[in-house]
Image (cartoon, rainbow, N blue to C red; front, top):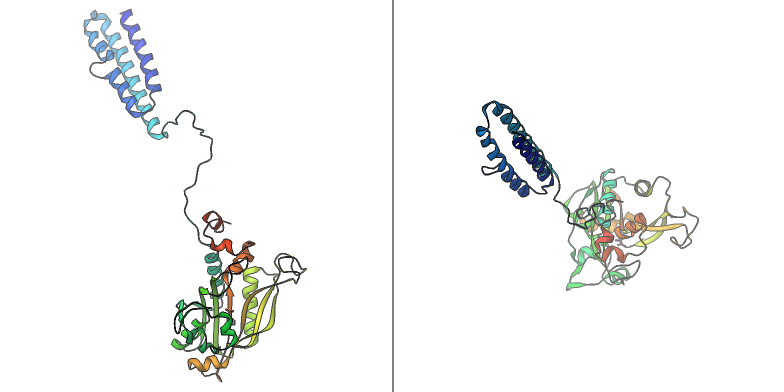
Length: 342
Ligand code: PHE
């Protein structure tokens, strides 16, 4: 009896230790077979109870069953521990290293800014429109009151795909395309890529995004034009940003203006970002020239409106303080992915 009980206890201890040491489910299964399987020592000991003197059998049987149940319980516990735990680390693995997040991608800073600009104009009733990037010279120049031999055309014209098909040099042709299709009132914003004969340097790119705007209705005055643009500037750049309208020239607007905002860095004091002027130019704009209305069949006595066009990349540079426009177009995701979360 003593021998029986001590070998039971020995078995209990070595079984418990083997279960605790099992590092994977397969190993645990081997331990189970070894200790509790049909040929296991515990099973043999249980069978051996029969051979003990009768008065000793109840105690021996009870003790053997207790050991069996305890081992079963430990096996169960260990099995669920192993299922919950991550795979064991290889020796030398530093589990304190921070995890690596999965790369999800992010929107390009120009896309973020274009969306934000369109959303602000949406508050003023503007809807989005689109037009083709390969454009006829009629829409790109002529319909916009820009004869092909006009210096304004000469400055821009570039990348001809055919005799009278050009990669559009601005998003303004979408103004006339939309007006041909729709009667006033019209309020649209037009994001899209344009192409220029420009060098690729810190502040120019030969292909870049613009956002065009056009509002046409009865009774639109220069006051509504200024108020709308100033509203956009305050919403986009902040309440304390001032807007300045500088006289300029575009063939398709009269009068025309360049719109400046007070320098976001020095607030008008003058710094290197604004080249000491206190102002930064953000768009060309003006009241729609009646000649453009005539070209699309709008009654230029009845309708007035304003239009504007801005470079999205330049605005993104201001928003995110990006010093060189080429960074936006060099497709380095490590640079480009950081803005969505900023
Ligand atoms: N299309 C002009 C440009 O690309 C900008 C502009 C748009 C000016 C609308 C006036 C009105 O420079």
